[in-house]
Length: 279
Ligand SMILES: C[S@@+](CC[C@H](N)C(=O)[O-])C[C@H]1O[C@@H](n2cnc3c(N)ncnc32)[C@H](O)[C@@H]1O
Picture 1 (cartoon, rainbow, N blue to C red):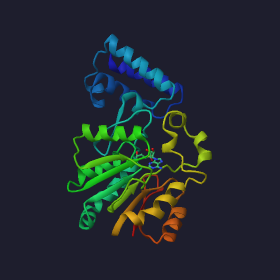
Picture 2: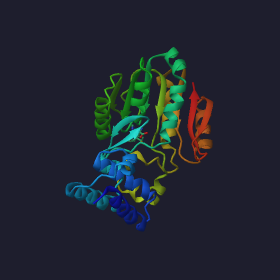
Picture 3: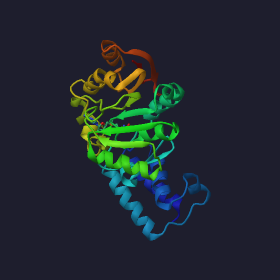
């Protein structure tokens, strides 16, 4: 069988079960199994071996059970880095790239304060690793309460050969003893009552601990913003990702804790996505 025949078959199966973007998913599955670029499906259209077909069929079955493709492949891409993921660690989202972009835009200002940057709720380490790679003179510390997540972050540091990132298990600031020029965080921010309504591929596969932001979704903003000042240098920055519709409430929390709001950056869907605070 030729790759494009299999492409049509996968596309029709996923479309009949109402999966989003069935074309894109069919391309991703074939490109992963055949180890070719997506464009080469159309330019080379290789023959598929029996073995490859068996693997493709097993991936389709897992996908039909709503398992995310990133967990099936065991990895994804984030801001140009290869990031290993699997059960127990959140799959990095494209909108989180906005947060790292905002940090990188201010790298001179940050380095003028100090070389140390802290990434709370680091998960796979995606934010910490991109910052460490792109701000060469920095030392980036990523912390997470989940030991499993920290093991993924350490592995991601290794496979991307990034020396200036360091990971440790910590309940937010509990193991932190120093001050930082910048603190970043993409905390859990879904309201507890909304988790059961999330898409099956999120609620049945991604870690609850990475999603649950408490009754109103704001538990982590209250804790992080209240404590952050004790761990930042004068004129330090706090970059924090926001859930949909949370900007006003987080703005209030920040003002009550004496922070200045430098900017709120929107994502491509026009949702307030990243808040940048200054001590
Ligand atoms: C939304 S995920 C973000 C992961 C990663 N930074 C990213 O952007 O893909 C939130 C992370 O916070 C971690 N977490 C939950 N409670 C925590 C706590 N009390 N202290 C530190 N990390 C916590 C979860 O384990 C999860 O990895």
